[in-house]
Length: 471
Image (tube, rainbow, N blue to C red; front, top):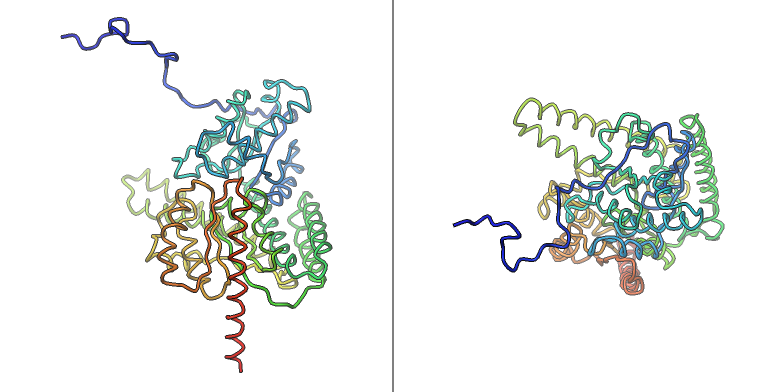
């Protein structure tokens, strides 16, 4: 009996509306040629405005045209949901939505056609191979939204993604060592500025003047970073900045201390991407940990180091062994650079002058604390960090907030799953887990307000206990 009938031989069969003629190979990402460098503008964004602002210095020094997307706003998520796939997480909607919104704005402002915009603009951003609950497909999501919006073959440069590796010969931009060094300096400077805001916003006697001073200092650091002699100018600029901030008058009142952790975007956006969470907590009369991107970078390098060490141990042949030994050297070198930049800048900035919290995580210590409850080599999201932080901070913070995006699988597994066990063992932890989606601010901040109320009560008990012990 013949079983391989063709479509025409099968009675009652209906031909598909769209017939796939060949295997789909993904979206195109054409080369940005060096000869077109002066004609193309980089649209870029890195989680929050300070890091994006300070990275301008690199583009200025290297002659790139750029358009900074700045801080995320609620409208970004609307564009992301309209053009992105369903059930994406908050960071993907915000970042892809900000890009689409900007492309439409450029079209309206300039009168350029979509085809002309594709030739004259590229996107540079993060979010490469993150998203284990999306199987690492975030790069394709970026391509999907721009192509579905009509900007066919729009070009992308995505950090931590293999779509730009190896960098094609003749490319006008590449993720090379000078860029990574400048990127590191940019996010460390951004951390220091956010550290200053978190130290001064709740305690400054004149909050408006303090925040204005932070912005002025940030501008001074940018001017130093923009110079070709930035390696010499930045230490002096940092010393001057720390002195200026240290001269601001601060209250000596004791405030509840709230610790915020969670997924990198939901934790560190410092804008409407996470409902300005830290600023809300500070304006409600609490001190909050600054949330340092440096900590996140060190965790990623630690994670890749552990992966390389395991791969070396179980390498199947000399070629694989060589590959992972090279990766291990790369991770250790990167960690050395990040730590060296951070420690040097902190030394000149001297955050103790204005009460800034600058201590970095001991990733090994947090891994050891969390290992009995969540193995530190289960990678994805923030891994075991939240668990280790919760145990480490159980007796020293008055409130502990886990901020995660809507639909984030690894964050939900930890904050909604494993943390139930931790809270049973450490009932003194005043904990709330929030899920950001871009459109439920009132509900989320009301829950945070309840945590703040409990944090005030916990601080009273903690301080009264300390006073009794001292007597």
